[in-house]
Amino acid sequence: MATAEIANSRILIVGGGSGMGLALAKRSLAAGAEVIIAGRNADKLRRVSEDLQNPEALRTAAIDIAHEDQVADLFRRIGRLDHIVSTAADIEGAYELLPSLDLRAAQRVVESKIYGPLLLAKHGAPLLSANGSITFTSGIAAYRPSARGSVVAAVNAALEGLVRALAVELAPIRVNAISPGWVDTPIWTVVAGDKKDDTLSAMAERLPVGRVGRADDIADAIGFLMGNGFTTGTVLHVEGGHRLI
Image 1 (cartoon, rainbow, N blue to C red):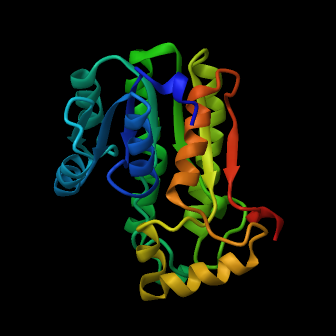
Image 2 (spheres, helix red, strand yellow):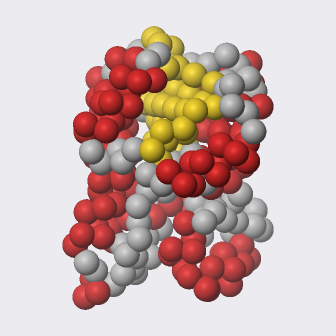
């Protein structure tokens, strides 16, 4: 993470209550930033706030980014920002073969990874500084989908198209996407259940880097996108060489 560029900035992290978003929040606070963590689970946000023990630089907000009134109200309350990051993804029930796929589960993925980011950009961009940035989270499923991953693959690919369009419309604000590979975060409990460890271990053996990702790997890459003023409309792949296998 480019510490000098992050210090004294104000960063909104949606999905910062766990995994990659939480790792980014920790790094940003350590670099001297003011951080607002937003998510749907108020209890989780309260635990995170207590664990981080940094009340002066940290705020939390319980919202659902699929609801425009909640997003608009959030930005009215928090005011000026330098960076917006969303790692939020509601994929519960979406990794299913087509005969078992429930449409509502697919809709929740779209809401969390397309409509939510669109609303964050709509209401957040007017509050960003001219050299500010927006970073959304795509993923390897857009490039190496599994048999059960049609919905997530489609949504990730659509999000990358949205990022390119927003980079043009919102310029000079920079808009980018981070595309993680397989990263050991709590979301894998939803994807693989009690087979999580075996599934990740098998992938680690296949990847050129010899391991799956860690939340800090992704946080470090998002830090680059926030701090580099010459990067926009870009998808940054942090996936251990997964696209090569």
